Length: 207
Image (cartoon, rainbow, N blue to C red; front, side, top):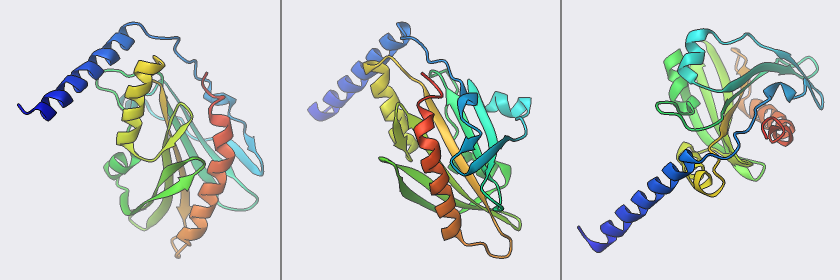
């Protein structure tokens, strides 16, 4: 084994060991209270959406979730979904919409990354039969806004050692697109405007 490969192996083993030690002596687990998110966000008025069924909840493995729709004036309501995970668990990980939406019949036809706050979010346009929607999602990791699943896991590893915290959340916004050719640019503008109104509240939902 070359010296470089040996050094990388030692670093990986050391990092894994540190993370395991942190897991054995966890800090105080945050207590999620997603229902603290206001139903009134600026000009957006929210209402609870249908509860997820038991099979879906078991598959997701989240410790808490929120499923609502928000409407502004006479515009079509948009969907907000937040899944919160308090700590890493064997066989449980945050499900990326980019991977799980195809399993429900929604095909991504556009994939991009957009700036949001001090970070970035993933922007998708998805299609299912004649229906289309714009999806905006990001990983919320201790105040960070991350579009990349790999980056979110790297920060969780980092914070697991430094802060002894492994909690994270997935935030997803869905804007339906008209079957008569709704503008994706307008939908993206609405999604980002709503995301900017949601962002300041996220840190208050788990402490």
